[in-house]
Image 1: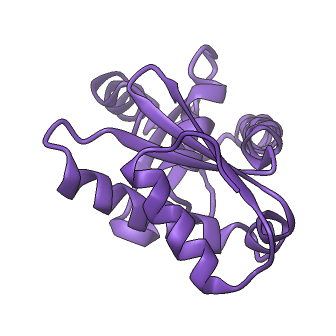
Image 2: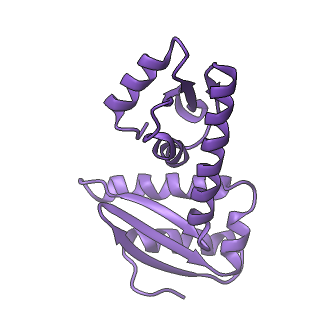
Length: 169
């Protein structure tokens, strides 16, 4: 079951149906330049298991479809049963713990590799702090956020990278 959804939502609908995960509903909304596809129901619960890897994979596919369908390439975010809010809260707490550890040790702390959306949430969670800076290192699926304390030699480089990237790396 769905409300009004566009072509990208229809693609996601067909993909989830083929996965055979149970009943679900999809709704579509816009947040600025972003399309948000919210999935609810039994299938959504199955999708959200496994540390969000399935949702990340679906989001990658849906964004690739969006890029092919539209020259202005609208970014698509899949929200599974309100999972995005819980994930954002979890990552904000993680960012604060890592910042505290970096400040205590006086050394940069690298987080595990994560997807672009999660990296951005870490950057945003810490961007207003003056005592730490964030930067991303690595390539592709191995790209990770590094939290750098003010006392570290890498602090100025991290601050400069953060400002250049607008904290969206």
